[in-house]
Length: 288
Picture 1 (cartoon, rainbow, N blue to C red):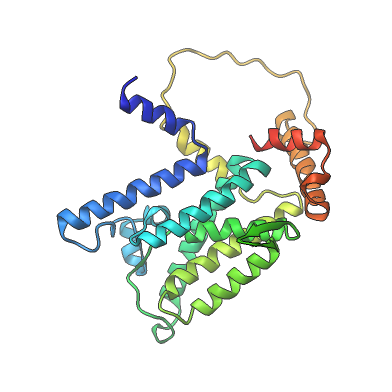
Picture 2 (cartoon, rainbow, N blue to C red):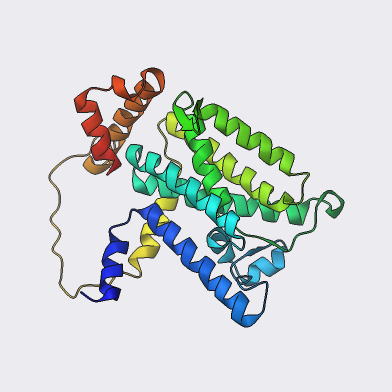
């Protein structure tokens, strides 16, 4: 097997967030190479989200690409370490597509919050910045989502067990205080992502997944890039009826999510070890 095929095989075996981490690392090193050989300090400016709205209109893709762009080594290191850790927890408990919805919507809402603040508020309240970069808004969305949806769950932080809700509160307080510091634009984006994560968790507790519309949009976009088969498909009208106005697949997905919610509530109250073997197996299968 050639090296390229071996790398492709290993990449395909990664989960969705591990692939995002790899993509972030590749973009970072490309930027570093351009900095060295191009003798520039703004190698990835084409991907960053500009603070000026009219500049944003010239590169609308930056509302997504800024979340894959990092300049500093410690910036990308901390972001990707946190993303790796929390993504493992998320993918064990929720659908991969739902976790991706939270992450990308966090990046988008964080970017929109940044654009709103820097184009609507008076400049005397703002610290001048040309653009914002980094995955922090998406990561904040995931952390705040967990802190609201699984508020009582303990996680190990260094030598201490801390409830997720306290981690969420500390992060929001830090971001609010950061509005008065040098990274004001970044903290605005963080708070936008945090707001998305909070709303997502609240609505999911009510039985509504607010990311389904975004998920369908992304599925449609991805379908444009899939190779089309020349084979004709014959469709047979289903004889099975609907369930409460939903298809069987939609009904089963809803029921499975409610089961997951009940199991997560049990974990938050009594810990993972309180689950039965059947519940652990169901949670593991749902995570996959």
